[in-house]
Length: 375
Ligand SMILES: [Zn+2]
Ligand SMILES: [Zn+2]
Image 1 (cartoon, helix red, strand yellow):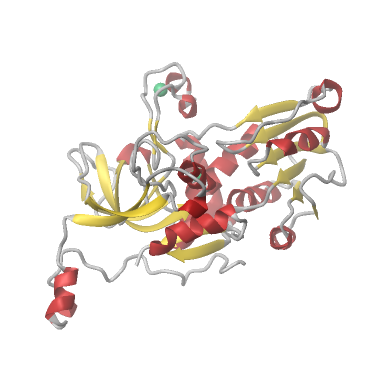
Image 2 (tube, protein in one colour):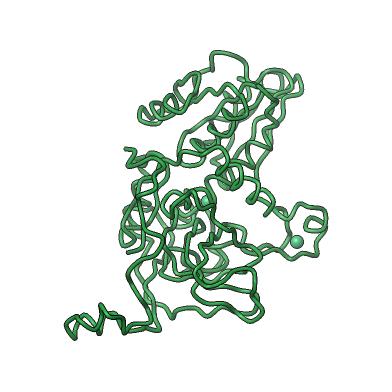
């Protein structure tokens, strides 16, 4: 279900929780409650214990020290964190864990509450986003040629380092994003991965002006990407088995909706595969016009069945993947999102129900983008 479209009323920009304690409100409370609000050196978080099927409970609650920002870093008090399919792949072990008990979450919207030595890009109180790309080496041939998304030794939020399924997170300020003021925390969170990666997938699909775009799978990322394409004058055809997703696609302006492997009503210049389903690659390639391009947007895809050169690739059809994003992609996308007034369909979950959010995502019970909201 769609809980809400872009609105201005979903969340305040800051919560009444005051970690410094001693506020006037606190002074009037019973001692036990005041004790609860006293500053603490630990925080609650969710971590991946033993990766496995989501119904076996691989995500567990943990108590961790509140992290301190190092040089060039900032600490965010997490207000909202999007739930991405990559988190599910990590919890289930499709994406091998890079370290035990890592805290997932790479669509983090928070308020800067501490600066590391030398950090000067933001000030305390700024609303900032942290995304998947946490750090790159800056020295490899890819970093030096404007392709830092292909860095040979990258660091990723919520995989290599702890992410936003927590009350606090520490990030490098150079890799953080200023959040456009027109988006509240709830609606900004999905922009940081679903939005940015979808935007890069759209670039990779080489959609010509006024072209015909096919979208396979229609969740958090796809519904944002479709709006960018529509704003650029494309005709968009959506292939998904979910009836709710089809209705959302039509309401956003899609020209047609159909079943996941149905041929679209016209040949496609470009297609993006958002569903992590390799068996959809052949029908998506077959749906391309001559010279068309299919971009696979996910970090994980089940095996692709054998392809027929003549039916799937000949006539210069292209098949390509999408790997993370550059910071320029992120900045360009956020500016565009604000400019066209992107409608973000969200499905909010209380922060302490992260495990339920992942289960719902696994069982296709989320329409739009699931977002954890901190109290
Ligand atoms: Zn590099
Ligand atoms: Zn993601």
